[in-house]
Amino acid sequence: MSKNDDPAFHSRFGGLWVDRDDWRQQITARHLTSEQINQIEFFVRNGFIILHAAATPEKVDAFRRKIETSFREGNKDVLYQRHDGYDTLPLSQPEDRLGVRVVDSFVPFSEALDLFSSPSLIAFLQLIFDADPLLFQSLSFDQGSQQGLHQDTAYVVVDQPLELAACWIALEDIQPGSGELMYVPGSHRLPDWNFGGDRKHWVATEDGKEPHDDWARHLTQHAKDSQYGVQYFLPKKGDILVWHADLAHGGAPVKNPDLTRQSLVGHFCPQGRSPHFFSTSPHLATIRHRGSLAYCSQHYDLAGRPDQTRTDAKIPPQQNFMSSIEAFRQATKKQAS
Ligand SMILES: O=C(O)CCC(=O)C(=O)O
Image (cartoon, rainbow, N blue to C red; front, side, top):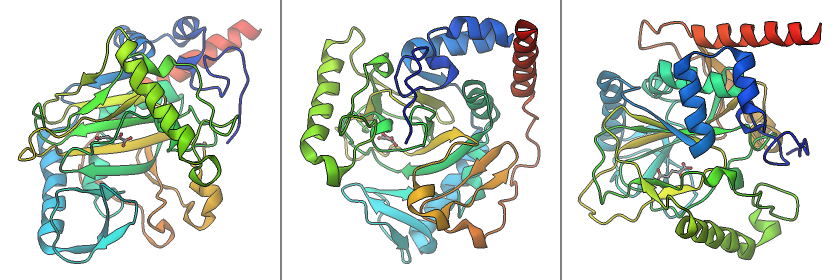
C-alpha cells in the first residue's frame, strides 16, 4: 500500500480528486452539471450520498429470489460467512439465512451485477473516480450486522488506500430497530489514524488488538462529540447509499430481532488500482468486465468462468463520465499551453 504525502490532499495517503484541497477548482475545470456539483458538494462535506430509487424493484426482487432459493434449496456455488466469524463456507445445503452474510454474490448471480450496474450508481462512481469502477468485495445481509463503527480503510485494502468507495443497496424498506446502517457525517475528514505507525489498514498479527480497540473507541468518541452524531439509514427499497473510504459507519444494534434488514454492499476502487489480495493471492487477480463495471473476487477463481452476461437488456450509456472527463482534459490542455 503506498503513501502519497502530496500536501494537496486532506490525507497524506492521497485520495480521489474530491479529497484534494482544491476540489472546488477541480469542479470548475470539469464542467460538471448542476446535479453533479450538488452531489459532489454533499459528498465532500458529509462523506456519503444517497441515490434515491437508484435500483428498480424488479432488479431487487430478481436478486432476492436468487438468495431466497439458495438458502431454501442449497447452492454450493454460493459462499457465506457467519456474522461472528470469517470462515467462508459453501452453501451446500439449505441453511437459516439469518445471522449470516453472503460474500461476492455477484459471481454466481448476474442479478447482483445488475444492481451494482444501476446507472446512477455507476455514474457517481465514475464521477468521483475519474475512471470506471472495479467491484472487488461484496456482502449481502438478511439481518443487521451489528458491526461497530469503523472506517473501511482499516479492513478493505487497496494499493491507494483512499481510492475506495462503498455502496449499500436497500433490498426492502428498512425499519427502525432492524440494525440499520449507521454512519457519522463528516467523519471522513478525521485526521489519519496510522496503524503500525504508517499504515491506513490494520494488520491483526503485527499490530495486535489494542491499536484496533483504541481506534474503535476514538471513532465512538468522535461520534459523541460531533455536531451530527450517529445517523441511521432508513431507506426505501432500491435506495443506494454511497460512502467515502474513511467515513465511520457500522450496523446499529438489532432492537427487534423479528425484523429483517435485507441489503447488498459493494466495495469499489477505480479500474487500474489493485485490491490488496492481488498481491497476496495473485492467482485470484482475474478481472472480468460487464459494461462499464469490472469485477474481481478474493473468494472465487474467475479465471475459469466466462464474463457475466447482462440479464437486464437495456442500460443507458454512461455519457456523463466521458463528457466530463473529456471537458476536464481539454481544460487542462488549455491551461498547460
Ligand atoms: O451493513 C452493515 O451493517 C455494515 C456494512 C459495512 O460496514 C461494510 O460492509 O463495510
